[in-house]
Amino acid sequence: MELIKQRGGLASLAHSSEYLKPLILHSLILGVMANTTTPPSQHVPTTSQLDLIAIMRELYGDGIYPILLCPPYLFIDVIKINNLRFQTTSAPITETTRATADEILEHIEAFSPDDWTGTNPDAREDWLLLGRMYKSSIALYCISSLQSLSILPSSKYYTAMRTVHGNHLYSLLPKITRRTRIRHFTIWPLVVAGMQAVDASPNVRRIVDEQLSELSKIMGCPTPTLAKAIFRRFWTSGHTGWDECFDKAYVFVT
Image 1 (cartoon, helix red, strand yellow):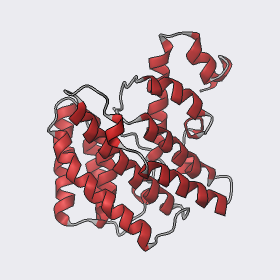
Image 2 (cartoon, rainbow, N blue to C red):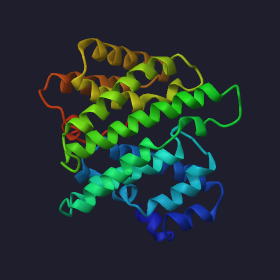
Image 3 (cartoon, rainbow, N blue to C red):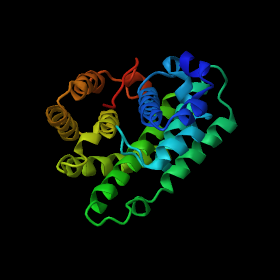
Image 4 (spheres, rainbow, N blue to C red):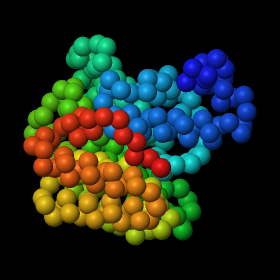
């Protein structure tokens, strides 16, 4: 990141060469998604700043998806959630903080997967499933991670929202993992499902565990196996919070 500063910042570097844009986007996506499963005190600061949104709208909004098939509309919300979490390391939580959290959640809820599917009939079902999957998983990330920091309360209202989105996500993931064109991109939503499964039945936990095993074979990498180990420990720990599950830096994007 120091080298990026010396080149005039992210925007200047991204505009210096068309060939650099995919590489920069790749690095920024890794940083943003890593911060979701990392304690706020250990965030990569550059990828938890609201200043990042403008450059991400330009790069990610162009439709370049090297490692993540998340709708740009929702990806911006992830950055905003990360920023709220990161702010708690240096500033007290205020009513403005809580109001911002509610605004982000309302923005997520307003997302329409049907409006994101495009016009290609061959790919429409894939995009629809992805849009629904990311809407529910990012809503869960918003509620769970901000409840963990007491930005959002653990009220019946938010508990009900978590249950609805959790059940929706559990129903979508098996469908997506059977679709060869998009199943490689389910690791992060599946990780969110694993965290949410701390409040679910043993059968749901078993399904998440089996899907992680299958995804490890499909992807040919150990990342889903690491997630399995984290959840098996977390599910029996007696803890239920986001930052208790992801108590150190993890990256669940490949």
